[in-house]
Image (cartoon, rainbow, N blue to C red):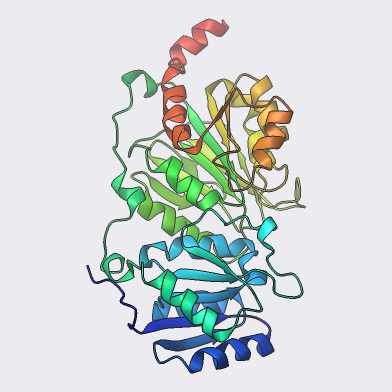
Amino acid sequence: MRKVSWMSTITLIIAVPDMGLRRKIATDLCAAPMVQIISETRDLMATYTEVEEKTPMAVVISGQLAREPEFEVMRALFSALDVRWLVISDQTGGGWRDQESPWERNSDLFPISGSISGAELIERLQTVTRRSRRHGAASGAVSPARQTITNPAPPAEMADSGAFILIGASTGGVDALISVLSCFPPDCPPTFIVQHTGGGFGESLTRLLDRQCAAEVRAARDGDRIGRGQIALAAGSRAHMRLGGGRPMRITLLAGTPISGHMPSVDAMFQSAVPGASRAVAALLTGMGRDGARGLKALHDAGACTIAQDEATSTVYGMPRAAMELDAARRCLPLQKIGPEILRACAAIPPRATQRRATT
């Protein structure tokens, strides 16, 4: 695997909406022979296109763009290329201040000051790209999440239980979902996910998760029936995902107004599953705000197994905290334990025949 030496050329994209700042950064870097600016962009969609086409070693991106929900998906999509993201931390006008950063735990993100000098920026670029593994990762190497899939065979009693899985996530949720889903077997129980993200990235996120998971991940579509080995993802759409009965379970997508400030809403999905709570295992992962807390409480009170991610492993401990404050989660777990616990809880749900005898 080739490592980047001190004098190797650093291919770079500058993604900054402010043209003045963008040109200043470009001018400062032009004097460095080891830096090659291959593109300048002003919004996330253009940045996404340029990174996908030109695969830079690093991107200098404004805090304003890094705070948009689409950025998390974009960053995860390009993690296999090991792109380094240098995020301007104090850009004037809605920038990313360090104390508000939800991304500080990610090893591919590096905050820099908006007033950083050209020489300091060059030194920073050399430091962060010297550890780059991009040339090895870009060759088609299997991602760490894919390598950790063990595909354990589910217990026989799970097959007839009718168990299903519900997961809600927001800020930091892409990496959290990869962690949770990476341990799911190819024939996992039917799984339904709402992930907050902006429009335009839902399909990309679906493809990302599908590549990382042993089970099939598909975008939620109205009228679809989701069975074993299938995961339905609602992200970046203008409709709420609600679950109907039947086997396989049926999805309904309903347009309307945001619920708990979001569309699609985790609360909307959780609430729709309350009639089947005895067969449900629901998890609320990292995220800002309170979406999902009330729905998780309703599922908890109706007999579902409910789980919240703990503070130590949450990128933003907002949604899980709100759930814990409502006493909505039976268990509060670190991220690495949530996937296995979900599968264990599904296996513990008695077969449907036993459920019917118990209710007669």
